[in-house]
Amino acid sequence: MIRLNKFSNLAAATMVSMLAVQVSQAAIIADNYVGANDHGWGDVIGDAADFDILGLEGELNGNILTVSIRTNFAGKGDDGLFDWATVSGNGIGYGDLFLSAGWNPNGDAPYTGDDNSTGNVWSYGFALDNRYMSESQVGRGTLYSLNGPNNADNILMSDDFLNAGTFRNGQEVAVNTLADVTAISPGSWNIDADNKLINFYIDLTGTTLLGADVIGLHWGETCGNDVIEGGLSVSPVPVPAAVWLFASGLLGLVGVARRNP
Image 1 (cartoon, rainbow, N blue to C red):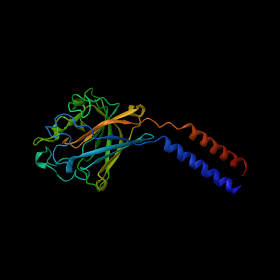
Image 2 (image 1 turned 90 degrees about the vertical axis):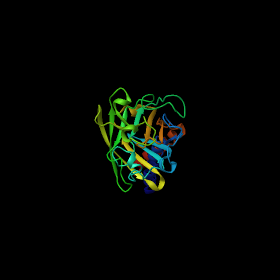
Image 3 (image 1 turned 120 degrees about the horizontal axis):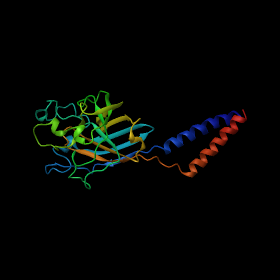
């Protein structure tokens, strides 16, 4: 009987583990977005070793959205790159992450006519507390609802951060926290420079993003020298009938074990 009780515990744990795996699946956005005002450079303006974005992976587990951006810029936000061209004198920093329920870009890939005035209207923005953070620190941020009807009412563009040099101007890169925006929830982010990753962890509770089949995402450095944008499919993965049948069998074994101590 002891063996059966042990098996029942294992069966229950196995069933929970299987179902948890079934309802969570990572999705990938490839970097096929160029955007407007590339000034003839194409995908990356400047040195690709500094600015190239290689892709994005996202996963929704419960109400928590995890977004990992693979980019050569990971770890360089505190390097003071092109500080002479920036308004703050701090150099190029990490941009905020923009989100929306659905994604409606202007045109087709590589979206060379798409910028803040022509492209997708963003409903939410995850604003970083320190966009010049070093990789040794733990980053904090806040998810905001962007209440203005147009991007220009809610955001700061690459033009707001740079006043010299060649950059992809007109791209949304930061939340304008002084505009008509509402703080929703705190979040966190970190930098894994060894693996070229910038990771965001955002609680979507109370947002329309949780009911969406696709979450639109947009991120770039404050210069916009490379930008990644696309729609992330977050629909729950259907649990196959065979899995439900097997799970039911496991539950039956648990019931037998409990009736026969």
